[in-house]
Image (cartoon, each protein chain N blue to C red):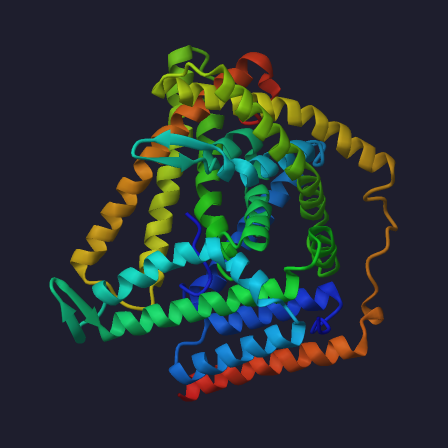
Length: 240
Length: 211
C-alpha cells in the first residue's frame, strides 16, 4: 500500500472535483489517452487495489454499458461496418468510447480520493469547505439512520413475506403500509437522536472548524500539481 | 433515473450544479424563514435515509421488478426540505455505490428535485381534501406524476447532452422505450404513495408537512 496522494480530506475533495470536471470536458483522442495514463498513475500512486476498483465498478458499469453498446449502432452517418440490419457508425463509436473512458476515469477518481474515506470524515471535509450547517447536520443524521433503516427494512420485508397472501395489487398497498410503518418508527427515533446530539453539544456556537493553516505542505503541492494536470489536459484537448 | 459521469458535456454538468445550488439556496432560505428551522431536520434526515434505501424496495411488476425512487413522497412529506434531502441522498449514493455521478450530481438533483417540489405544491394546494377518493387521486397524482416528470427531465437532458446526435427515428425510439420502461414504476409508485399517505393521514397526520 503506497501513500494517499493527499491526506487532508478537504483538499482531497477539491482535487477530486477539479479533476472530475476537467476529465468530463475532454473529447480529443490524444487528451482521452493522456487522461487514462493520468488515472492509472493516480491508482498506482494511491496504491488502490485493482480488485477493489473492479468490484466497485461492477454495478455502475452496467448502467453505462447499455448506452455504450447502443450508441455505435444508432448515432452518426459514416458507416464503417455492416452486419445484417446493424450498421456500425464512426461517430457513434467515437462517442461511446469517449463516454466509457470518461466514466471509468471519473469513477476511479472517486474511489482513489474518497473511496476509503469514512463518510463522516467526508462530511467534515465538506463542512470545512463551507457547506451550510443545515446540510451538514442533515447529512450526519442521515448517516446515523441509514444502517438502522436498512436493518428495520430487511426485518419488516421478511415479516411481510412470511405473512404472505398478497395479490398483485395488494402488494402495492402492503408495500406502502410497510414503508409508512418504517417511517413512523424511524421518525420517533430520529427526533430522539437529534435531541441527544444537541444535548451533547452538537452545533454549539464556537465549535472549531478544521484550521486551514494545518494543511500539510505536501498536500498543497499535490493539489497544485493535480490542478496543473487538469489544466494541461484541457489545453491538449483544445489544441488537438 | 440517475445520469452517470462521462456522458454530459461540461456546460450541462456545470449548469446542473448551478441550478441545483440555486434551488438549494432557495429551499434553505424558505426553511430559515420558518419559526423553528431545525424542527424538520430529524424528519428530513429520516426521509433522506429512506430515499437512499428505497433502491432496496423491489416490487414485482411482471416480467421484471421495479424499485422505488420516491420524489413525490419526499415532496409531500418534506416540503422545502425535499431538495436538500435529495441532494444529500444522491451524493451518498454516488460515493457509496457509484449510482449516479459526481459531475452529474447537480443535474440528477434537478431531475428528482423539481418533481419533488412540484409534488409539494400539488399536495399543499389539494392535500386538504378529506374525501377518501379525492385524497387517493391526489396521492396517486403526487407519486406517479413526480416519477413521470422526472423521466421527462431525464430523457430531455440525456438526449440533449449525448456527445453524438441520434437520428430522428432513433431519438423517438429511445424516448418511447424510456417512457414505456418507466410507466410501471410510475404506476407502482403512485399506488405506494396513496397507501403511505393514507396510512400517515390516519395515524400521524403531522408527518405530512404539506397537508
